[in-house]
Structure formats: structure tokens, C-alpha cells
Image 1 (tube, helix red, strand yellow):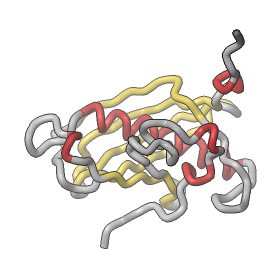
Image 2: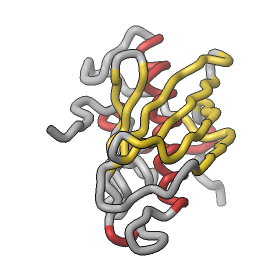
Image 3: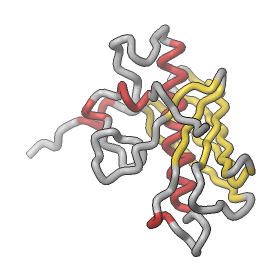
Length: 163
């Protein structure tokens, strides 16, 4: 049975925040990463497309970095949403995070043609800053490990440019 995320935090991002190439549900050309709970950890499942190839049979490293990046910010949003007493689907908008730092370690070549499973472990380091450690698996083999420090998106990100 294939694993999948049923309730994703990206489903409740306000429309203004739902355009990310990696996880934005409104970006028609994007990856549409979806992050949900896996017990006390978080999970994103993604099957790379043929264009995400590095060498025949293997996934491009930038694709893996993108997965870790968006999984990290989505996981932080899940955690703050939960901390605020909210659950996905209760009618509340999710907080939106941006990446303050991203670190990726490639442990072994990641095979193409199989679903990738990103599993995140969260640590609050400030009321508006979370650290998410992510492991990426292919066929239950650990292929990459990463760390994202995510911060609540500043309101200035949506400020309109004045003329």
C-alpha cells in the first residue's frame, strides 16, 4: 500500500502564500509537496518526475534539496498551527514560514522511479523560529539528511511595491 498525506498544511495556506514552486497548491508548474503529521513527526511523500533526473536512474540533488526545504517550512507551519490549538481543516489559516537556513547531506545516490519519503523531527528554538531535521528515504533506505531553520514569514513579504 502506497503511503500518502491525507491532510496537508499546504491545503490551508492562505491563497496569497500558496504559490511556492515546491509546495504551493496554486502553482500549476510546481511540485505540490504536501506535508502532514506522522505521529509526532512530519511526512511528505513525493515521486520525482522524469525531468528530475541527475543521471539515468538517479534523482537530481536539487530536487532532494527542494523537498527538504519545503518539508522543513511545512513542518514548522504544522507545529505552530498545532501549538496555536488549531488542526488542519478547522477553518483556520496556517502560518507561513520561510527558510532562514538549509543544510543537506547526500548520503547515497537516490534511485529514480520510486516515491521519496521525507520524515521530519521538530524543535522550537524561538516562538517564531523552528528547526526541522529531515531524513529522505527511497525504498526504506536513507538517502539524504537535511536541516532547515524556518522563521515565520515577515508581513513585508506581501507588501506591494510603491510607485
